Length: 219
Image 1: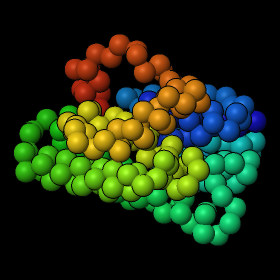
Image 2: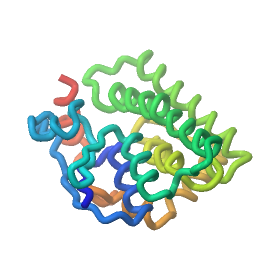
Image 3: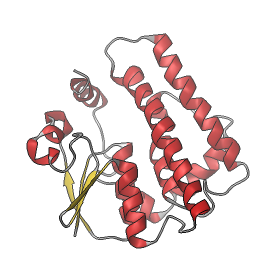
């Protein structure tokens, strides 16, 4: 049995959506990051880096969201091609998210939402780079329904971050192909279920308290 250790973040959604798409049974363990639960010794034995998500598949631990997605895809033989070129194409777009979209949007979130001091040149830098990456996606999606042939973990990984663009202070005006793809992926039943883990997306959030809690993690 798989246990998912997660919280309501884009990286967490990558794991939960993948599990839902693959119809794998799992037990949910929500970590309270506001009290640094992810740094407790018991969890560091699962993920030495003290971050979410992580999974335990019986007695086998997997950490890092992209590694979890690849492990689950390989385990089931789904959402990842088996031929070398097809697999490489998926992994390239997965790495695009992990090395670019995620870090740039993450930093935009920090400086636009959470950092107590508004440093506009820094905000501009991360927002600009995130939008550049959105443009790369938009140009590619002008000629492809999904990022890497058939729907795959590459789509899940990028969607999990990009669909929350407004939280980073961004908009996708004029990026029509990206908008089409966001809607296409977002309408999948498994994506809706996975996005609601660990809390439904329409849960009312006290933004001020949420930001205050997030700031404690920056210390």
